[in-house]
Image 1: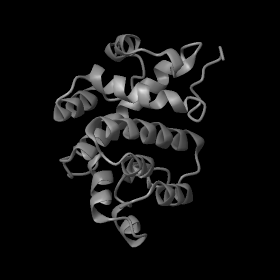
Image 2: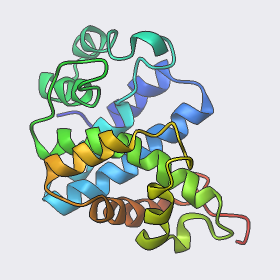
Image 3: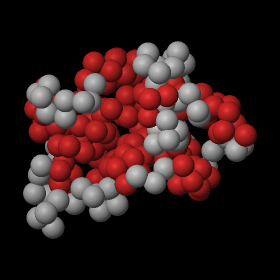
Amino acid sequence: MLTLERARQLNDSAVTEEHLILHAKNVMYAMGAMADHFGGDREHWMAVGYLHDYDYEKYPDEHLKHTREPLLEAGVPEEDVRAILSHGWGGCTDVEPLTDMEKSLFTVDELTGIIQACARMRPLGITDLEVKSFMKKFKDKKFAAKCDRELIQKGCDMLGMTVGEVAGICIEGMKPYAEDIGLLGSGQ
């Protein structure tokens, strides 16, 4: 099973751009919260979340095409590589998310982008962000326009949950790490 320490070693060897590291952390913390919700192994889900964009910095136009072999060679278990590949389902892979962990990663990858954008606009950052405020921004297609809302909805449907339910879990899961993910806001 992939450990968080190993995921950090691997990701940090391939990812240097600050915004990509920040995204990896956002997804990692959201995945920890999703693991708690589904009764999964928190550290394991966080590790997969942190490593999910392993090849993106070097191969943005061929994302996930340079992930499988290097990660397998580095000793990442097949099931964890599969989970990472599944977050690109329908876009850059044909690996369908089947497990709760895979479906969660597929969903929160995009969802955390909107959460981050929403929190950055608030004086207290994510610390007082509520689902109601998030949902207003989610419904505004011009806000964080690059985040694929249809994909998020598809992921939530696969999980049998509403966007608000998943967002609530992720927001609460990210709050304790507000400082680490730069979402404390300017009012603190």
